[in-house]
Length: 457
View 1 (spheres, rainbow, N blue to C red):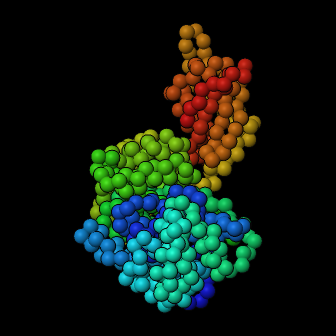
View 2: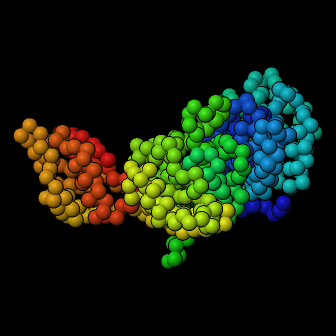
């Protein structure tokens, strides 16, 4: 581990399991990002988020508990990987908060973690957590032997947090004054073990998230910053979000996994782009259809990655044939780009993100009003508009009313005359005219008399 002081303003939170690391993390970032649960080993990867305290901005990293985890349930592989993630978080940080449980007293594992931190050479402050009442503060003296300043705090009740943060902030490098670049959020979703974490690690060139064959390895949403440098030297910034494997509800029994699934679905709703990862050997199934429907319902841009394509190299399966059959299975995904990749070998990995970047650019498509109106008028002329009770839908004017995703408002005589079939037809015509592959288009109908009309995708 390098002892050179990092240049970034990062504070890592470490400690043994169930001392309140994730609760403190959520308190510092002022949002419930990390899953808090009494089960041991819930947090495994590094979670990073922005924070602002005492007028200063910095980033906070939550880590998994350092312990002898239940090997029968999690396996040594996850245990080792969690420890590696903690080591990486310490190395990247400029200061560390060591969290201990004041009510449990000083434990041997607390000493082990402190020994690791002394070896790393990072500035450390100790958060003696669960000091919910002022009368408990004296118990913090039990941890003085760890060799670091100790602060009695309560992450649950926000006691002592400012004093703790103030002590940690003293060790951070000076702020540069540069604003954090705006980043689009790319949610990587799919069933368990299709290679979501492996894809992110291969793309970023670092073992940033834990990869394991154990189902349910990823639980929290893991945000990984990624910057794409274009041929002209420009930079575009993204958050890659690794999500928990989305299994059928009937197979989800543990409360932690249920909450992980809920967070993954919530992430789809909040993302700018969703990358749906499939296993090439297993192909799309009922769960992929449900995920695709979720993507469609939230009007999200999408790219499909068929991972583990290296396993098909010795077979007679052709990518074009595979894609044709897959589009028949997931017919409602329309013109979404499909890329065949291998996170293991690196096949098409860089190209895949170029495709994702192209889809991101389409989210900001601007449709000139004149061109848009010509496209819609031509579409109405080529297909007879809907009739109902002797009345026919008439088009007057169209205008773009939003981006990410593109939204178009159509002014018509009577919005209720519109039908799903005609809406789908108009959507296809506009998408083709403006090259919106992979990007949803939201159509809204308004009465030419000013009354609000119906909306449709």
